[in-house]
Structures are given as structure tokens and as C-alpha cells.
Length: 299
Length: 255
Ligand SMILES: Cc1cc2nc3c(=O)[nH]c(=O)nc-3n(C[C@H](O)[C@H](O)[C@H](O)COP(=O)(O)OP(=O)(O)OC[C@H]3O[C@@H](n4cnc5c(N)ncnc54)[C@H](O)[C@@H]3O)c2cc1C
Ligand SMILES: Cc1cc2nc3c(=O)[nH]c(=O)nc-3n(C[C@H](O)[C@H](O)[C@H](O)COP(=O)(O)O)c2cc1C
Ligand code: FES
Image (cartoon, rainbow over all chains, first blue to last red; front, side, top):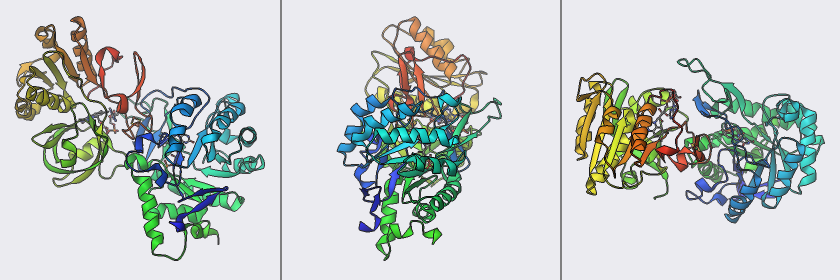
């Protein structure tokens, strides 16, 4: 449907609905349910140069209208995904946003360079810890984040999205990475939280803290997308608790040109497809288009 | 094995005794597809995430044995008859075939997958013995279901208030014979003891592991467990594993 078509950094997407990194793996688990090409794009699980085993169990726990996760960036490393997953995903006719991270700017760049042949866009996860700053996430340090983006930009010819954290000085990081060459933004990543078990009197998660996602964080996503939109001309991929047509439209009004569905996929594996279908139905009876809604709250 | 999908279930009957209960669902699209050992990721109305449950199929119905421990399981126990839910399934692997006679040891909600297995094995003409361990007579409502499998049933209570007194795993070593295959699902101490008894006689043994799950289908990586042979994701690689692969914790874990 033409009314949902989006041009995002020179790439054409049939609709603005994307899966969020880490909630859809590389798509294989869901490919028997519906063609992955029906979605705007698939964002793949965060990928590093080498395999990472991840955090001790338990890794997830439910909260009020949300969940905490501490997967600990588990992934099989870029070589495994270049062999088994990315070529397969491209062959499905899906558009692919590859989420990358590393321990230092050179590692981010290495992964970005290797995945570029399969990536419509490269998404850089700035929420991962900067080993050289005592594990403080890049997202807390505008200069360090800019260094990562500069390295990635040099390594790939694909458009680069800086994935922002709602923690730390989000807008200052955005400004710094834009100056360093970021082509666009995605936000929000999760917000750290904790649950403590009343019986064991210990944190529930093996890693103690975990990232909060789901409907509970949606107002924070709307606020940050809104604020970022006022500060930049670059396109925004918005996410945080999105499930329904109303959720997606609200983020569009705030300034999101595309939206990602994350945690909702755990509740319903058809959630991203249902959002595409819901938007199609919504716009079928109207004279305007998705793009007419983008940034609408600012006019 | 049939690919999983999102199925519709309707609660047609329930039997709740305090924090334990049996939910009986009509699930025509699912009952044919499930094998013993496999599980569902079951929607709980009002909760964000689904909850993994390993059911039995008997009489064309789906039987889910639930122990209330948190909002999800208590929400399931509180469902009114007629409630309609969604369930992803069938998920995970199934129990392998026994070599000779099958000895099944269940405790707590482990009874679901094992009475399903017992029923299938008896129907296939395999000699099957089903041990069930309960805390007290409050689990007596399980007896008709255990007996309906057609297996030889031995029911144990810790306090001796119903059936034999003690733990099923205390009696297991006396019942094992060469050629048997052991299946144990329940609290970790029960699975550990059953695994040891089987190992002593060099018999194959299988257990079903639990992990906190979000997706249930292999995409979120939340259910990773270290086995002796390396890491696995319980929802995709399991939940059934050879007992000799498992590191059993020394701390009791009540299922
Ligand atoms: C393959 C599989 C099959 C299962 N089959 C059954 C079944 O047939 N009947 C049944 O009653 N339960 C079964 N469980 C366990 C059930 O999924 C959990 O008890 C349930 O998810 C807890 O949710 P809650 O909201 O009630 O508790 P929560 O508030 O989430 O947690 C309460 C307690 O349960 C523990 N817990 C939470 N989730 C899990 C989990 N997924 N596995 C193990 N412990 C957990 C927590 O550490 C905590 O101590 C199964 C689990 C798995 C992985
Ligand atoms: C289990 C899980 C794993 C995630 N893994 C990643 C990851 O590897 N890289 C990343 O940038 N974000 C990751 N995220 C964050 C999501 O992509 C998304 O930004 C966040 O969850 C907010 O969206 P939601 O509320 O729709 O889930 C993960 C989230 C969850 C719940
Ligand atoms: S529960 Fe998501 S990978 Fe196993």
C-alpha cells in the first residue's frame, strides 16, 4: 500500500514497521508464520566481532506492564551470522537493519564493515559498555559515542543509525554523533531497573539489573522522540512499548519516521504483522498517508 | 514435528486445590500436534508475557497442571470456566523412545508431561511404570488421571497420608532393571535423585529443565542453560535433555 511507503535515508521501505533488535533474532524463528518481507524491515540481534556467552540466569522477569532483561549481549559473533543468518535473511526478500556493537570503536567498525553487504541500514548500539571507561555505556559519554560513530562511518557505505539510550545525556549524545556523521537515529533502548525477590531477599535477575522494555516505557519513548525531533533534521526510528496502531501513530506524531516493535512480539509473534495490517486498514479509509503524520505534533 | 503457531484454547473444566490445580482445555488445533515433553507458551489474561507450561493430552483434551507461585500461575488458576486464551505450540523437543521398560518419576507439575508420555507408551504396548511423589493427600485428585494412563501406578506422599510413605526416588533403585529407561520431571532434587539411580545402573535417563522464558521460540535468548556439553537454549534445544548432561544445583528448587 502506497500510503505506508517510507523513504528512509535513501532506502525504500514498503511500510514503517520494523522489528526491534534482540526481540526477533535473525528472523528464522518466525519465517514460517508470515513472509518477513511483509514487514518494513527486520532489525537483527546485536552482533559483536566474537561470540559472547551472555549473563547468568535468570535473564528475564516480568514487571508491571513491562519486563526486565539481562541477556548480557549474548550472540554467536559476526562470522557465524555471515554464514548462517544474514544471507538467508536477505534471500527472504526482507529489508535488513543490522545492529552492531563492540568493545571499542575499531570493533564496532569491524562488524559494520563485515555486515555491510547484507545491511540496508547499520544500527549502532551505543548502550553497550565502554570497556575503556570502566564499563560506562557509550551512551553516557558524547565524545566516546562520537568516536564510535566516526569509526563506523569510515568502515561502511551503508547509512548509519545511532541507537540512543534514554539514560545519560541523550540529546547531547545525539548532537555529538550527528556531528560525527550519524545519518539517523533509533531510540529508545531499554532503561535499567531491578526486581528483588521477597523470599530470597536477592535481586531476581542473575545480572541483578536489567533493561526495562514494553508498554511501561512508551511515554518515555514518545517524550525523547519528540525532543530529538526538535533538535535534528535526521530521520528517526522510534521504539519503546509499541504494539497498536495508536501507539505507532503517537510515535509518528512525536517525530518517528519508522517504528519498531520489540517486547510486543514476545506476547504475540504476529504483533509486527498485525501492526502493518492495522496501519493498512487505518489509512485505507483516509486521504492522508503515514508520512503526513510524522512530526505532526510539532506543526 | 509440526511447526508451532498461535492456537486458541477454551477452558472447559478446572479443579483447584489451594495453590495447585488442573486446567482442562478444548484445543482442537493443538492436541493432535503435541508430543509428550513438548510445551506451550500460554497467555495469561492481564499479563504481558506468556508462561511456559508442559501439558498432557488425554481424551482429546489438553490438561495443564499448575502450581501457583506468582502472578502468572495464580492468574491461570483463577481463570473462569469458558475463558479463551492463546497458546504458542507445540514448542521444544519431545521425550525419546525408551529402550525397554519405561520408568517415569514425577513430582509436582511434572505430572503433566509424564502422564502424557505414560499414556502414549501404554498405547504403543510398552511396559510402563509411573511413580508420582506428592507432599500429602491433597494431590489425591491426580490419581484417576494417573490410573487412566493404563500404566502401573505407584503414588507416594511424604507424610504417608495417601499411597506409600516417602519419596518415589527412595523406592526407584529397587524397581530398576537392566534395559529400563528412566524419565524424571519435577523438583530438581527429584530429578537429581532419579538421574543418580539410573546412572548407578548405567541406564539412560531423561529430565525436563525449566528456565525463565520470554519468547519460548528461540529468539530472545533468555533461557540459556549451561550443560556439561556446553550452552543450550531450553526452549529450542530442550526442555528434555539426557540427565547425564545436566549440572544439578544442590539447592532445592520446588516445581
Ligand atoms: C518447559 C517448561 C514447562 C513448564 N511446565 C509447567 C507446568 O506444567 N505447570 C506449572 O505450574 N509450571 C510449569 N512451568 C513453570 C512455570 O512456567 C513458572 O512457574 C511460571 O512461568 C511462573 O510464572 P509466575 O508469574 O507465576 O511466577 P513469577 O512471579 O514469574 O515467579 C515466581 C517464581 O517462579 C520462578 N519462575 C518464574 N518463571 C519460571 C520459569 N519459566 N521456570 C521456572 N521457574 C520460574 C521464579 O524464579 C520465582 O521463584 C514450566 C516451565 C518450563 C520452562
Ligand atoms: C530481550 C531483549 C533483547 C534486546 N537486545 C538488544 C540488542 O541486542 N541490541 C539493541 O540495540 N537493543 C536490544 N534490545 C532493546 C530493543 O531493541 C528495544 O530498543 C527496547 O526493547 C524498547 O522497545 P520495546 O519496548 O518495544 O521492546 C533488546 C530488548 C529486549 C527486550
Ligand atoms: S525463551 Fe526466548 S530464546 Fe528461549
